[in-house]
Image (tube, rainbow, N blue to C red; front, side):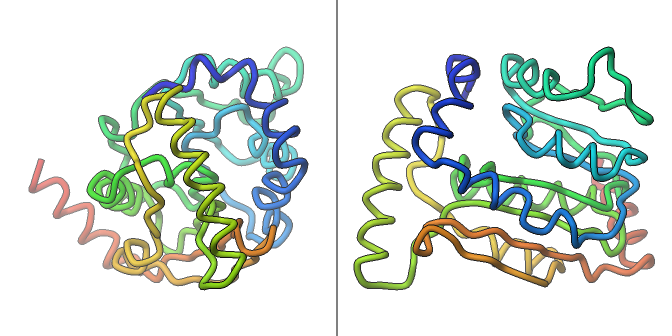
Length: 229
C-alpha cells in the first residue's frame, strides 16, 4: 500500500469531492479534548489535522507516522516556516503493521480516515498495538466512513464506498476490500465512546473515545509486552 502517487493531488481531490466535510470531521472535538502531552497521529497524510492540532496544543509533543514519504512531505509543509515550534514535530516514515509504539506513552491518538485501509485481521493488530501505546486515560479521536442502518442513505453510502475502495485498491494497492467497524476492537481494548457526530446523511462519523485503563492495568500491559518480547 502506497499513497505516494496521490500525495500531490490529495488536497484538491478532497476539496473537489468532499468540500469541507472531512475537515469538519477531523476537527469536530479538537476544542473539547483536554491538553495532551504526547500526541500520535497515524496516517496523517497531507497534514489537515496536524496544522490545527499543533496550533491548538503548541506545548504537546507530536509524532506523525505515515507509510508514504510523499505524504509526510505534504504534512511537513503545513507547519510554520523554519519549524518555529515550541515542541518540534517528529515525522516517522513507517508502516504501522511493522512499527511498534512505546508502551503507555500517548495520551492522544488520532486515526482520521486511516483505519478503513486495513483488512479485519490487520485492523485488530493495529488497534491492539495502538492500545499498548496509549497512556492511562488516553483519548482517541477517530473520523471515518460508515454504512447507515438502512434506507436510501445506506444504498447511497454503499455505492460511494464501493467506488472509493475500487479506486484506492487500483491506485494504492489498498489491502482492505470493504469497511470494517473498529468500535468492537476499541471496546475490547478498554476504550469507551464519549461522543459521536454524524455528517453527510450518515456516511461520515467522527468519534471521541477514551481509555478506561488505570495505572495498574497500564503497568500490566507493559509487563506482558516485555515478557512476550
